[in-house]
Amino acid sequence: MYAFGLCIDQHYLVPGLATLAGLADGLTPAARRRGAVRVLTIDLTPAQALLLSDLAKRVGFGSFGLRHCSPMRTSRMADASYITVTTYLRFEFTPGFVLRPYLIYVDADVLVRGDITEPLDPLEPDETGAVRDEFNPAVGACPALPGAAEHWPQLRGRPYYNAGVLWTHTSHMSTVRKGVEHALIHGRRHILHNDQDALNLWLLHSGRVRPVDVGFNRLETSRFLERGNWVSRVVTRSLRPDPNAALVHFVGPEKPWQADCPVTEDVSEYRRHMSRTLRHVRRLGAIGTEPAGAR
Image (spheres, rainbow, N blue to C red):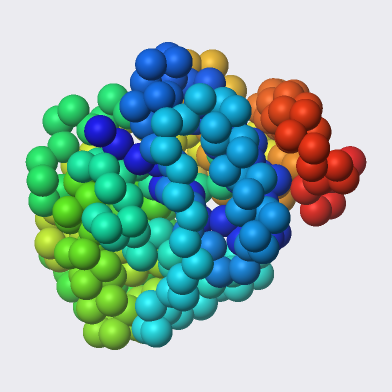
């Protein structure tokens, strides 16, 4: 019924493997066999693609597909400090490649703890499911979409969504892509957070969004508290780790697989999961596969 979509380049190969294993852990064996994995990439080698395929089979997914492609020509990298143009591939999934009615797109810098397919149930055919961004909760009250609230006053205070996890009908993806491309062309001066700003600009004008509970894309905050107190001024909830979150998202430049990342509770959990994933990988014969900057 559904496929998980991942966009992975060589820099994110090992985190992508960990995400793949986490997605499997969140499902029953029967659900894994019914599920599919689809990967878009710019630069993975045949050997790296085979490793992803072998791990997908080992953890029980019934179908795997990988395709090399390029992002849309209108892609704009306003911030490239730690993100590459690979981020725009999330809009290149097509029905002919996915071959499932539903697509759940997932970033590779996440810790999946549970079943994240539940938000598909209420999703209408012309909607995209997304979680409100905890660091940029509202247009005009955050750095995202600079100048948009002044240009379109009716958008001020409207929710802004994180693009790290998205739920959609596969048939709707072409509409999403066209909307994002239109936003990149006509709202270019309002783009700061790359593809996420472009997606939000289209969602704000189209209204085709289904809000999803924050537990399906909970941003990890403790790493930032190690460096300063700005998070407590932005995020209104308790900043303690949320053990009930089905997915924890490590946004920002410091990633849990990097040696210099603050060792928070969620980072420690991620590293334990990464170690288990690498044991799977070594059993597949991939010796020396380690994430860049790993300890």
